[in-house]
Length: 396
Image (cartoon, rainbow, N blue to C red; front, side, top):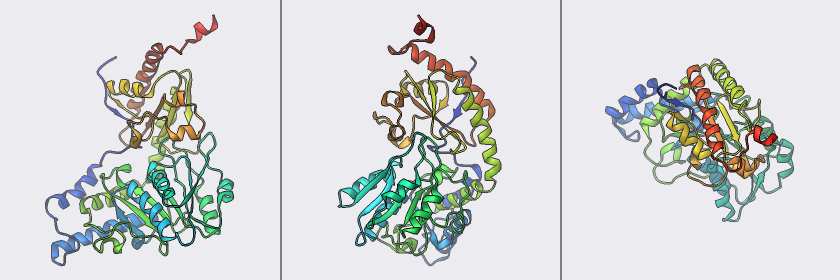
């Protein structure tokens, strides 16, 4: 085997900042330093840059600019949607519905709310990670004040029936939030038509080739929600604090690029993904996690029996391949993925999971290299396992 390549296959964790995005940001790092709340010219110029980016996000989402609120990222957006709605509507009830496979940015706020007297129903999923809309309907109570269901799962890539669940929420007059952090640039969104039943939607710039530390929450006009942060009058008095101008400008440019040619972009990624999928499944004792068809274009999550996921990651890293076992936000945890647990993967197998997420950093040569390296690493790790018996030995 020749010299190691560098292959980045962890786009679900973060993406690189595209050169066009960095170029758009640069003047706001070097020259345009004014506070957007100031009345003098360099402040007004920055205020205009913020509003231009707000319009870029609104166009990408099919929303009104006044419905876009900038945050520090997906975690803040999720926290704001869940806690902000719960506290704003607590006089109407204290019951919330979410799912067992949400990102921790939704699950942990829900757990916190349970300590504050709220009740939370965590909907189960099937073996592919899909939520059954009928179960949502059954879970609704008279005191239900919020439904939060992620659009697509960050670990296993399953895309949920969001439109149907939005319809159910609308019929019962319950605000509906979705964590859409993983879908920007992969699934077209239109908040006035196809997604008109979504009241709040979270997104994060660094998932679609923008800078880190900046995100947004779409809040449909008329939605009851408490302010996220108190202080100055920024973000129409909903989210105080001097705006992250550089990040906001970068996010506006990034979403404009990401949503331009979604269909052709997906075709390229899916072609590579399906080739990788077909070959990796040839490795014995390997299973795909998540729905085989209703999944994000670049997401693959495998379970390998008789190996430990962290060892697999480290050996792939030694060969120049960046991957993960699941959510980057859960790295360092010794517990098996809550998502894999929810879809019924046994803990000992869940520990041997591998997530490969493709994106614009990848090429067909990268697929070649991973397929050259991965089977040998799996075989080597299994040879070290006291539980693994090769097929020939089992036949004796």
